[in-house]
Length: 120
Image (tube, rainbow, N blue to C red; front, side, top):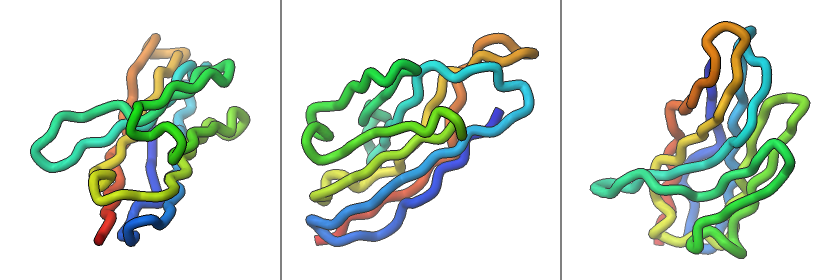
């Protein structure tokens, strides 16, 4: 099972970015919760937002009102629309998925990360 993120880059303060994450693997049976996490230099990885298989979302306080998480269940894909970006949003953003597989059981899978840089 593999997660591949895309959509990171350099953006000015107040700008927007849309991150995408695609899950792939022939052994995927189902994906329950998917989420976005981020890690800024010198800091621990932190939750940004998650969404369950039934569409229940959860956001970090820093993301509420600015970021929107969404899923394409048919394509095992995850998105994060980020608006009104701030310098403190600069971080590597990671996609995470809780996956039930037909071979390996339940797995927590992480993507390789995509860098978001917000410049002032």
